[in-house]
Length: 168
Image (cartoon, rainbow, N blue to C red; front, top):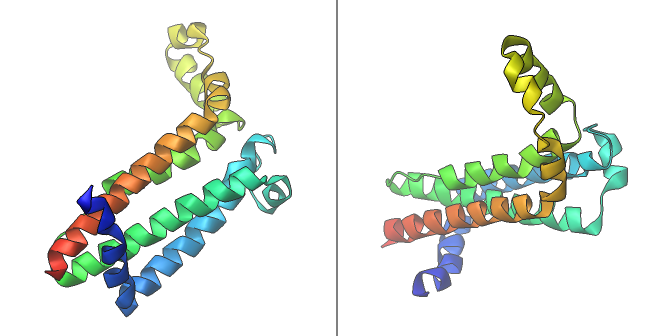
């Protein structure tokens, strides 16, 4: 529990470094843009682009902000840690970012049906399975986002610990 309390201290160290602050801000802005365009894809029939912004809900904006902040802060901590000389990994954060984007890409876009059709053309038995993957993703989308945010927070925590280790 004491390590979690030290996360804001690590963030202050990282944001005091100019290069880490620039990278973190850049990653935040790019992440926010991507999440704001991708999250409403469920409502747009899989279309991703500026048209998505009309379909944003307050909840999706909140999720996008949360994930963008986590990615931005983790990037800042990672850059700070690298500049201090200790290798910093952010695999959990990257995994969280990927998990956050996948549901909307797979739920209501033609990517999943095309992929299953391609597999079924090579392996006919695969097409006969008829797994309701898109329905599962659409039904459990909120849980998938929660898991993605948990992975991202875990990555932030791990990088904060490493950043504090470097600062000693």
